[in-house]
Image (tube, rainbow, N blue to C red; front, side, top):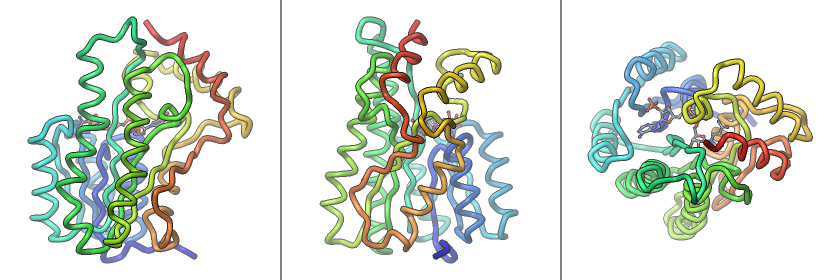
Length: 267
Ligand SMILES: NC(=O)c1ccc[n+]([C@@H]2O[C@H](COP(=O)([O-])OP(=O)(O)OC[C@H]3O[C@@H](n4cnc5c(N)ncnc54)[C@H](OP(=O)(O)O)[C@@H]3O)[C@@H](O)[C@H]2O)c1
């Protein structure tokens, strides 16, 4: 069964790059009107334009920092003003940090939690009344870091573990109201997120991806589109009675091997 988002409004956070960009483009390709959030205006406008051109449906760019209450409030307000409804909320925006208990200062902890946990909680809280009206659904983008026990990104691992539990608990709260809540948990996925925190050159990043592929029994790291396809599957009517699940998209990644690679990246 194919997916169809015609007539639906989908909000994708972190749509200016990586997995969010791939998801936004795929939702637009399958007929959705999209609201896209990110801080990098140039990148966000470029993705928005490509979404509009895909099937001619409207696409709204919202430049906002979801690590702030003002950014979450503006995102919710502008989405409601522009479209008057919301069918799918994709909480994808996220940041990481390569750090341990001994190396991370509280600023790192606060930044990661502000965006990866507080921002998701706040935006979801602000928009859940719209999702109840449409009997819509939420897809959170977590990480295998939320369940794998490895040294190298402590606040991020904790934040994603919190996000996983957020999914489980609110899926139960919202199920009687007809709102589904699921999570996609990517393994190593090609994007800018690692280079943002390691300052790797492209060559060093490619070397990391090659090494990571060695820790993946299926032999390949993921692309943004691999993850985006699962986001659309969970958001679609094909998953009508699926809620509270955490789906890993990781090629059967072996945690211990990846953990060793990440540990090497801590400064
Ligand atoms: N790539 C991986 O290997 C991997 C693995 C597991 C999980 N994930 C998760 O997948 C999600 C997407 O990451 P990615 O790999 O696609 O990384 P990415 O290329 O760095 O993209 C992250 C996105 O989040 C946005 N963002 C970050 N902070 C924000 C803020 N304060 N307010 C608004 N937008 C913000 C960024 O936009 P701006 O820069 O424009 O603000 C960007 O669009 C994240 O939640 C990440 O934890 C990624």
